[in-house]
Length: 326
Image 1 (cartoon, helix red, strand yellow):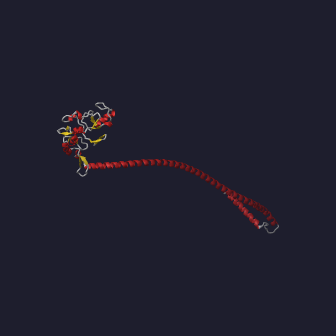
Image 2: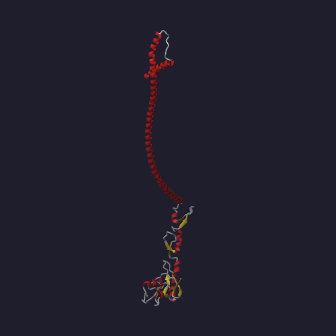
């Protein structure tokens, strides 16, 4: 990484935050930042010749416009990288390793590299869920026995489980649980679909019930109308039969009247014939007496047809009398 100030480009030395007490021998004040009181990192120089950490002076100048030491006016654009001699001095500062048990004294320029390799530096366990920290030199042994290390089940399921859970791991139980969970989800889906179907059927049934009630009322109205029509028909039939019976009586009466009229006409004719026959009969003794007195033979002066007619009239009168009596 390089830091650019003005027209000069110089290689930047990455130095972690190091305080005077971390150095052996103790750090000179000229190599410490007056703002953070730590070893200068990426040092930059003001035109007043005071040197500060780059990040520290940039933060300072956000709210101030003077040098923190001499109060001379300073602008960020006027900052330049520190002299190479200062940078070399910083890189050669001896720093004591902070890791417990480590007695190494290394140059500040390689201190970061040392921390990445120090066997005494405390590092975290790489396994998830494990919060254990130990020196780097014992990390390998811990990783091999870490209860949170992931192992593959060798019973056939191939599921990765932590070492602490492996003893209680049951492939069949897990498989059954997975199958049961899948079945449960399927049943939930089917239950939801059936619930929706039931609601749909209930709505359809309610509509059909309303429609049925409507048709029921219409059928009842039609039944009442039909019953009323039947009653009217029965009354009309009764009236028709009554009039038919009366018409029959009237017909029979008319026939009787016609018969009586005929009989009356016949009776008048027979009455006249009977009167003629009566007159003839009444005159018959006189005619017979006169004939006998004259000593001659009796000869009826009544024509034969008249005589027969008289006889028939008598017979008819007798018949009428018999019918009347009956």
